Image (cartoon, rainbow, N blue to C red):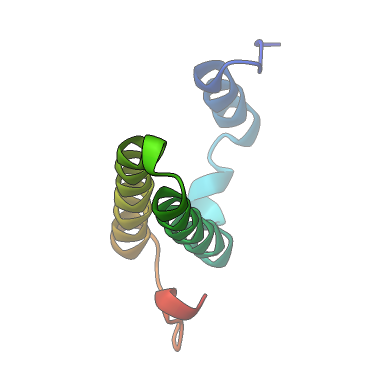
Length: 93
């Protein structure tokens, strides 16, 4: 059994465990959209902290931008790779 402590090994282990099940039963996008929403909230929180802590504001703003960019990229991946269900609005998921 592979060591599941590293991300690469965990992905490989998951691939071996699930096999082709992922193609047969695609994941519902709601859990991912929820995580995207969480990432946007983290970014907003870091922006607020940057306003309150001038000594580290540049670093917090940079990290906030990276988190927001990651959320946006993930949102694009979901939109392109996962079938959207009728009536699903990613902004409100």
